Image (cartoon, rainbow, N blue to C red; front, side, top):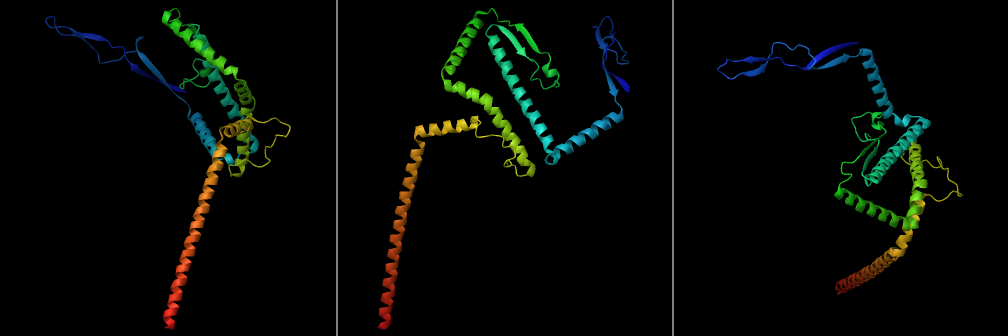
Length: 282
């Protein structure tokens, strides 16, 4: 490997021009740029071409493999789906957890962040989780206005959480979402991937049917039942029935009018034919 040293900014050597009668001013000397401890330099390292060729071939192979995703074996598709799903869940849970921790400790005048570099895109994945946490006392820790604001904000949050917990239905929905919601989403994605192996984009029948009649209802099934119950309580089905009956009555009336018009047209045609026969006989 070879390196090239490039001078980014030189430390100028200053000289004076002019006489004593005229003002003196200083300009940098342009003749040379010697290396000094005040200069800024950059070393360009030239890697071997074999390494660049290897990475180029690797990129081409990865792109072709992604384009041929439909041809992958099923075990490899499932492995990619498992890794993607659980990695996404981990990232979302981490983002929510760090926000909750910051919100709680903020009301105590503390600045705490779990994985402070979590959302910095310029870092690589490893540096996004380093350092693990950052902790410091806020500058407005003893400020009277900030203390009043934190007290009011904390009281409102506690009150909202208390009101939310009073309804047992909300707690049950959260439990169902935590227990069955992710399972439903995971199974849906797996079924879609299995069905997509045939190119139809639909779940393959019986491909991943792991549920039995003895298993409890899923979160989606309970949500559909609750939605249907709310619709029944609001009487939306009755309104639909009334609209259907109203439409059927209108259709019957229109059909009767059409029959009457056809009957009148038939009588006119008969009278016209009979008058023509009488004229021929005469």
